[in-house]
Length: 150
Image 1 (tube, rainbow, N blue to C red):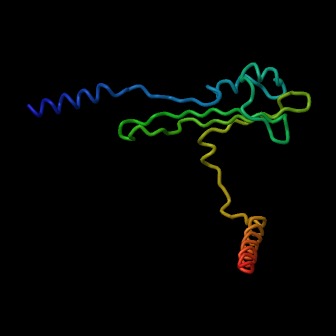
Image 2 (cartoon, one colour):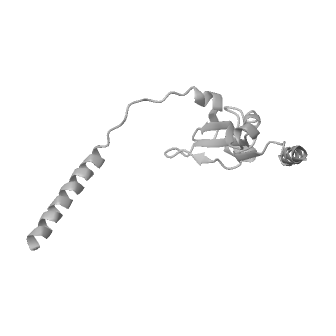
Image 3 (tube, helix red, strand yellow):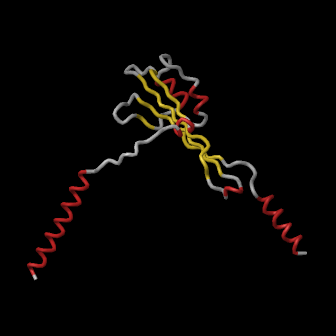
């Protein structure tokens, strides 16, 4: 009797689990396909806005640098305990000239980003060191002045 109850519980658990993947997309969907619709030295900013919409990010110092992002997360299988994992992470960087004509386009995928290497050096922050010394000395001075008043 207990075996049938356990079997029914396991059966109910496996049936109630969703078999379809849950996909969450952030940014522009199907960025790889849309990227093929614009051409260097032919397309302009208006064509780009019609295909992609407004850019996710524009360059900080250059308004002619547009960045579009596509990020897709998928829930893991039962063995991964439902954790999210990254399936797509595409970034499209478009650079326009002063007339609004596309001069350069670069699509980076998740495989390209895995190849990036980062420097191991650590940058020293001189301002923070001075602020620490200044704050330490000022607190010592403040303590000395409070002791004089007593």
